[in-house]
Image (cartoon, rainbow, N blue to C red; front, side, top):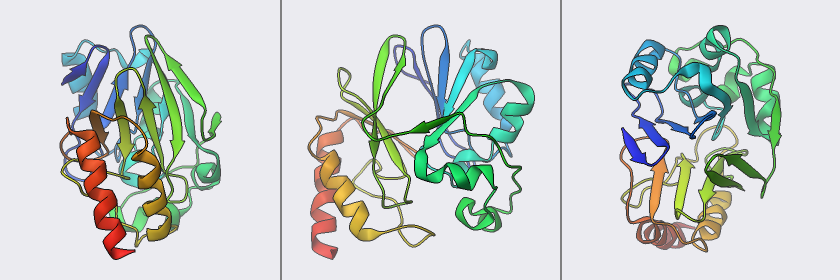
Length: 220
C-alpha cells in the first residue's frame, strides 16, 4: 500500500516483518522479511508499479531473521547494497545463528557482505527525502529507527509499535534499560507517523511514544 508520496508498505505475512520501499527514482528498502515469501513481496511490488531492480540499498532495522532473511534471495536476483548499524554487521557477515535467531524461525542464512556500516546521526538521502539514522538499542544492540523530520515520520523497526507497545527485550543482546533510554530519546522527536516492523501503522506517533515512555517508567 502507498503510505505517502514515494513511501510504500508491503505488509508482512506469517513471520515476515513489514517491508518499506522508499524513493522517487532509485529505491531503498527497509527490512526484507524472512525470505520465505519473496514471491509475495515481488508480486506486491509489481502491483505498486515498483521494479525490484531499482532497489539500490536494503537497510536493516536490526538483524533478526524475520527482518533480514530475504537478503540471500534479493542478492541472488538483484544487486542492492546492504546497510546495517555498525555493531551488528559482523552477525550478518558470519551468519551468526544465535544473533539472527535462525533456530527460532527455522531459517537458514548464508553470510553476506555488508556494504555500509551505519552510524548514529547519519543522514540517508533518497529522493525526495532525508532520513536520519537513530541508534535505538534495546530490542537488539544495533537496532535503529529512521526519522524524516519534514514528514514527522519514524520507521521504527521493533523498537516501538502502534498503540503503545514496544519490542521484546528477552532475546540475545536485548536490554530493558537500553530500550527505556531509546524510547526517551524518541520522545524528543516530533512524530506523527510510526511505520513499525510489524502490525499496523500509527498516525498518532507522539501519543504512542509518550504512552510507551510512561509504561517503561513504571517497570524500570
